[in-house]
Picture 1 (cartoon, one colour):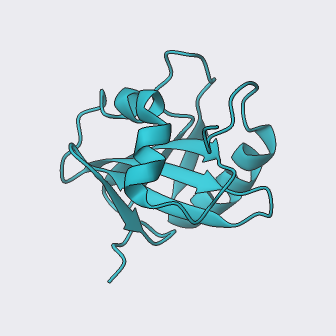
Picture 2 (cartoon, rainbow, N blue to C red):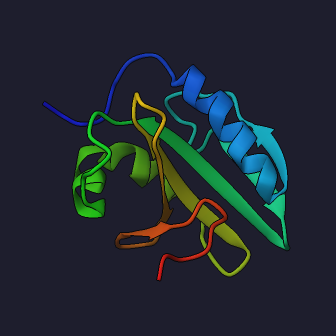
Length: 120
C-alpha cells in the first residue's frame, strides 16, 4: 500500500499549510484540479514558491520513498521551471499534524526547513 493518501483534496492540511506559508510572504491558494501543479503560491523575499501538499501515512519515509510514492504530483510540480527566484516545494504531513518540507529539484527531493532554508 502506498504511503500517500488518494481521493479528496487535503482540505485540513491546506488550511494548516496556509498558516505556515504566511510566515514566508503573501499566500495565494490555487483551485486544485488534476492538472494543477501546486495548491499554494507564496511570494516574498524576491522569490515565488509553488507548493503542493500531501498527507502521508508514515512521516518517517526517506525523500526517495516519498518521491517514488507520489511520482505524478512531483512530476506536475517539475513542469514549473525552477531557478534562483522560482522554487517548487512538496509539503507532507501526517494525521498527527507533523510536517516535513522538500524542495523539488530536477532530479531529487531536498529536505528543507519550513522557512525554505536547507537543512544542515
